[in-house]
Amino acid sequence: MQDLLYLPVQNVLFNDLFDWTDVKQKCQQTTAVINTKGLKATSNKSGSLVECNEEQIALFRHGQKVYAVKEKCPHAGGPLHLGDIEELADGSLCVKCPWHSWKFDLESGEVKFPEGHAKMAVTYKVQVKDNGQILIGFEKFSEKYFQMDNDF
Image 1 (cartoon, rainbow, N blue to C red):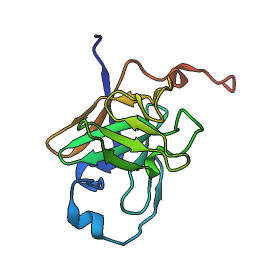
Image 2 (tube, rainbow, N blue to C red):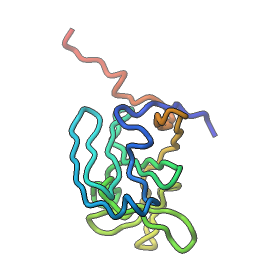
Image 3 (cartoon, rainbow, N blue to C red):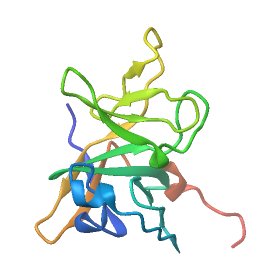
C-alpha cells in the first residue's frame, strides 16, 4: 500500500463534529446552519460537509474515531453528510443515504444494503492530531491544482 498524502480540513475540528455515540447530543433539538468557505454544517444528528483537496467530503464522528466518505452517494448522488450512522449486527458502521436508504460501510465503502450491488462509496483514511485538527488521506493532489488558466 502506498503512502497517503494527508491534507488538513479547514474550519472544522474534532470536537466540532456531532458524536454519534453521545446520548446527550442525540437528544438535543437545536439547529445551526453555518455557511463559510469549505464548511456547511447542518443541524444536529448529521455529518459535516467539508471540502478538501477539491473534493466534497462528509465527515462523521463515532466516539474517538472520525470517518470520511465522498459526499455524493454512488447510487443516485444523495447528500451523505445528511445520512444517519448505523451500527450493523456485525459491528461495522455504515452511513444510510437520506434519499433511498442505501447503506455504505464507513471503512470500506461497500454497499451493505441493498445486497447484491457492486457500487462503492469512496472512503478516506483520517488522522486526528492532539489539537483536534482533522487530516484526510489522499493518494495524490487533485488534478485541479495543476490545471492552468489561459488568462495570463
